[in-house]
Image 1 (cartoon, rainbow, N blue to C red):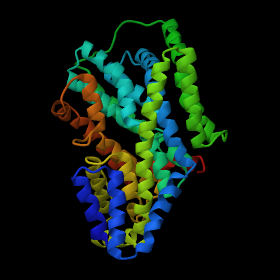
Image 2 (cartoon, one colour; image 1 turned 120 degrees about the vertical axis):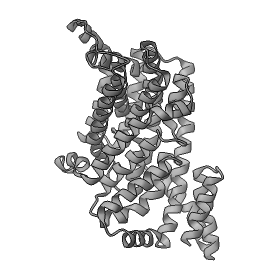
Image 3 (cartoon, rainbow, N blue to C red; image 1 turned 90 degrees about the horizontal axis):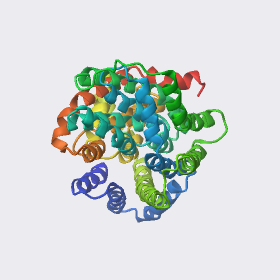
Image 4 (tube, one colour; image 1 turned 30 degrees about the vertical axis):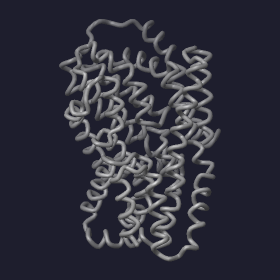
Length: 426
């Protein structure tokens, strides 16, 4: 049964069939092969039950909030303020891109949205400063990997629903890893990009700093409202996503006045399509996960893997290699929904908490977004910079290496991930 289920799944993936359809067809074929046709109604039931989930409502709201911020002038004001703060750092424009991506990721929860919103502003500036276009694109693409690691994060919501863990705890667990990755990327940019962009020597007045801060204050305050509201008990993560939408809409339309009626329509249309794609995949993952559990497949796989790898270090390395490999071909939501039921029992046997496993999965899939061929961040960045995938693929390697090294550090020292939730008593 394992061979039929996964054989059909991977055959369909190789043929280029969308992941949601692959999951649905694989389950239906496996049920038919088992001869237990009474299980077919359960497919529709599981799909509906998964979609009828209050927590998942956060996904379309965060997608909408990210799209509003991308077009509403929020990202531009963030960048202008960060540029003043980091003007004394070598390779400052590349460092500004990373820090701004971290801030934007703390609002949007999406990698491609972060690359588009921040890279759309900083890449042209980097090119004007003398950065090669492929270097500028690589900087923006690597900075975009922070979008789903720094909370709030759409994949964290998906993982929390799949693994039955707290969304709030997942958000809190992503803070330290996200900051660590941002620091590593800034350090890499200082080393690689200082030859294109030296530190400024002129002085800047406190008045300029305060004016820029005032312009960016409402944008900076947004993640404070979202995360502060969650951990202050004012609203749930799902409600925080709705608050983020309303807040972003108000300041973009009535304060910054950069959104037109036509843009608002396009934003809602784009958000609806993106949400439908994500939620359709999530819905069809439910019968797939249910059928695996029904056939005891996760336990069988976990037992086999643990029998092959008695060494904990080797097993953790193998988990990361598998996740990185899948990240080259599948998008984040699909990987989370596909591997979580399988990896959870393995992680538990290794003493790795479900929260730490979730962050490790999300970072792996985020690195996958800068790893060809399924490198969404690279596609967005090349479109902005006007270079080819071949050109940016060479420039992205140093960023991939430092992110993988940081990932391995967190894998073998999971307290980096779990420290903040444990301090908060979660």
